[in-house]
Amino acid sequence: MADLKLTPAQEKQILLAIGSVVGLILWVNFFLLPQTRALAEVRPLVEAQRQQLTQLQGELSRLPAMESEIQRLSGEFPDPSSPLPPEEQLPQLLKTITDYARRSQVNLFTSKPTSDVNKLEPGVSGYLELYILVAVEGGYHAMGGFLDAVESSDLLIRAREVILSPHPDNPMRHRGVFLFQSYLMPGPVRKDSDG
Image (cartoon, rainbow, N blue to C red; front, side, top):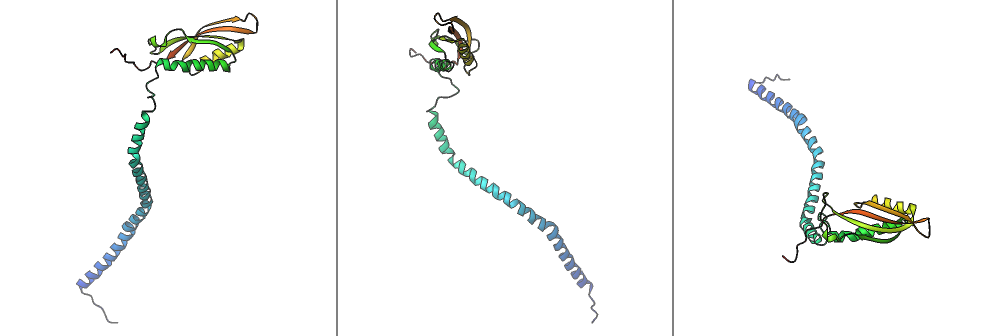
């Protein structure tokens, strides 16, 4: 074989070519491949974010329709932050007392407020304090059950006076008069029509 003698310029070019190939191999192994792997790991996350963005854009496009529906429905229902006027709370209160009497198996004779609900002024608690007179008849234990049911209900009510007396014809039955103190939410301020 012939003796190849390289000039210093040729040696320099060969070394540069070898160095470039080694550098390219190092760059591919230590930079390009890790970046490609990281990109492959991130791609599903990006796709999930893209789908979520599409879903949110769809929901956002329905927002004006939802706002108009809220406006339409808000006129149909009273504002829960403003309570009913006291005269509208009273029938439900009396009905609840009647229901407890029925469930407790006592006969309810009367259940009525002792004053005009429209003339009540808020007490120290901020509630309108209304006394309700309730007359019932039944067994002693049934009366106790009735009193317990009313006082442990969700109503803001408590017994202030209880008068029990035996029935004149049947000592197993009793007549009871309860004076309940109930608390009603002050209703919206009414504007007088007088001006």
